[in-house]
Length: 403
Image (cartoon, rainbow, N blue to C red; front, side, top):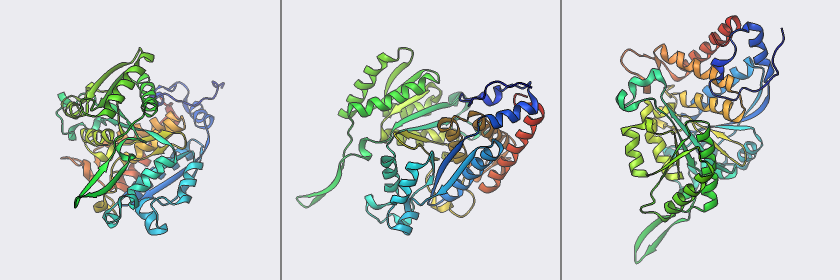
């Protein structure tokens, strides 16, 4: 049998579109034709971070085995775990390993154990330093309804619509990286943080957002507070000027307070939301609730070096060690890694469709439980997904991908 030229499947949805006429031989060709070697660093971190990281490792190991990739795994400390082990939230060895890798996966950082430390010494400082060290300036947070979970969204069906949006958040500037400090004036303490952006910082994040919109529904909503903040006025002028180079993209502007309201009134009106570091941090967590749980939301960060993938939930210290953490955000962060960093859309679609089938079977982690659901532990859910992935492959070997 003759086969077409080997290629990497790069467009979302190609899993279902691959020829169903080919059967097992074409299936095996697809698995072998796109094999690659990648080095992946895992930063499990704190709280539930190690638990959800194990789920990510399981999925990537299955993808490597079944599609004949060579994924080399290494784990390094970050956050509170790194403070305990090395006295700093981001050891030099961790950053060096991340810079040399093809992708980095982060579990979560932080916990009450380290809350008394100064701001620059706490676990979260390790994450900020990692972003700086890798030159990351873009964070993408997809908020997409998983159809089996429609019933647990806090919005009614007519308001929720077909929830499928991406928040493109500037990651290297703004208040989180601006000048800050504490001063005492006339016996009164005053603290300050500075929101600051340059034209070039805005242009590079907007360029990414416009490109992202071109691959989606060609709509961008730029979120700012230009009626109050000078930095937002520059943001709006810069994004508006750039839109002339993208005549096929419909651009609108919205104040952040209105955007927060519109997300709860009619989220389906949005496609790509472009916004600043702090506004993106807040809006993405709020939008996550629309999908039913913050535990199902993935993210990816890009820049001048190695990309970083992580679920957006926190370290949830109260859940650590209970095996109740939801691994879906980590699993979908892995599919973003496969698709956006490695160009492996076939593998990503395979995982995502298997995940939907597990959810359609009624299986839920405790945070997703609803009447009639079959509540399982996080590790049990991951094992069910692995088994479902195997069934999908067995089906494809017999009938082809498209059946």
